[in-house]
Image (tube, rainbow, N blue to C red):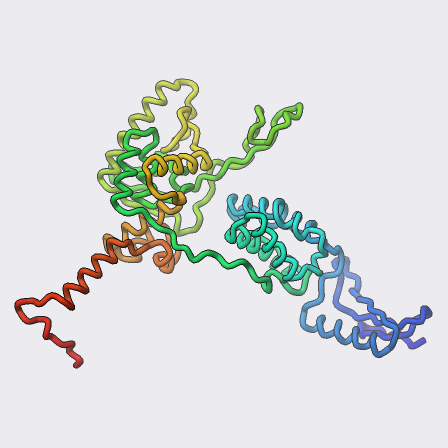
Amino acid sequence: MAGRNSNGRSSIYEGGDGYWHGRVTIGTKDNGKSDRRHVSAKTKAEVTKKVRNLEKLRDQGNIPKAGQRYRVHDWLTYWAENIALPPNISENTHAGYEVNVRVHLIPGVGEHWLDKLAAEHLEKLYAKMMGAGSSAGTAHYVHRTIRAALNEAKRRGHITQNPALLAKTPKLSDDEAEPYSVAEVRRLLALVAERRNGVRWVVALALGLRQGEALGLKWEHVDLDTGLLRVRRNRLRPKYEHGCRVPCGRKPGYCPDRKQVRADTGPTKSRAGRRVVGLPDPLIVLLKVHQEKQEAERAAARQLWHDEGWVFAKPDGKPLNPGTDYHEWKALIGEAGLPDRRLHDARHTAATVLAILSVPTPTAMSIMGWSSAGMAARYQHVLNSIRKGVADQVGGLLWDSPADGSADERPDNE
């Protein structure tokens, strides 16, 4: 039997079992002991090749960390419950990660060993999701979730490469969000004029506040004397736990003794989201009327009123639920006979109005809460009325014959 090398050098020797063995020093374990990895083969040449490959990976820093070996479901569970948590990420982002892990990733790829997960496994999962009716957007969200989880696993040395970076994702639709026209916006404004909390939709269409920003407004954020509104918080979707002593058999949200475990609001989406927005005079008038109506509701509710200061509240003063708010939007546009579009498209509409008014991009960024100028290209759209106006201007320049003969003018550089 060949002798073993000491002082940290790799060893190759023939064992009593008839196999050749190799041991490579990788580093130090968490407990301070030397981390020596073992390989074996039937021939000395084979084991030598394995030792050299292991040394190469060690020198490149691509050796998996010694210790616990995770299955994908174990790592995803640990990551979602201990790493990807507020305040490092928002409450809404964490809720989305939790759903993607529980509903899609663990059932789809959870039984694979973490260091054996391949891009092909993820691509098959995305294809299976699409085949079951999920949208490309949902598949992309799941992809971003597993990519984030595996990035952390790689950073901690549990894997040497992130397969999500190699996986191909379904192609997203290039369909552009269509804002409502000015005439359609006016039709909506007329419809909500006498509705309870109707001014909530005016705020969406005129100011472009995100849903969470609008529902997170409190009266302390609105100065009707100076005509300024301060966006400071974002309404979160409620999350509940069971409060019943005897299991009620219902989901937590429908438990008679449910307990809310998530705060009503969280920080805005980004630092740029914390902003001050000017209020048009007609909107100031509508907000004053809305405030008077809410005061009347407060008086009628008496001791049942929850004095929490929400601008848009339920009849008992509690904050509006984002889910209920979404369904009300869908019912509203259906009643108005308008094309079925997302609630977020109201934000595109407000951004496009700023483009129609030729508001400079830096000012539009401040009003909309964009963190980069590139968001203008995503949210501001060219309406058909603008296209027709430009076409008329081109027609007037090329085909009309001005009496002063200016059509014969040439550029200065010709």
